[in-house]
Length: 193
Image (tube, rainbow, N blue to C red; front, side, top):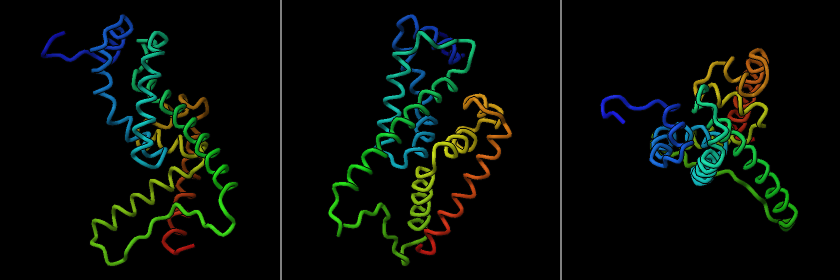
């Protein structure tokens, strides 16, 4: 490896396919930040996002021999993370139903946090961002995935369509509807509905 010119993702992946753990560690270091941001928006909190990202990298390591070095490693890794986010969503759905079933009838289950009106502006902004994260995490995957792929990961609508096996026009429509739902959810949260 040259100190002046870092290896491309594809070169590192090929080395990792040959058993070079240092090459894979370099890929992890290179992609963990963007992947965490992508997953965080999908699952809604840091702790679960760390777990999903870790699962994604473990799966990538185990599936590395199936990676085509002529394609984008970042896209391949994001597809793995997207599947892990879907798995997480299914598990959360089962847990919610289970706990709802077991909860006493007089117990109210609420995931909302109280935001004090007299907090400084920075804390209010942090609360709004947390509410947005929860709202995004609450979106159905059908809307959430194209929104995250284009806004967080920076893919074009055409690239997001290719990753989700649909058309760019369908992605455009799903993003529009996702934004409309987010606007509604955020508006309802601010008015207390």
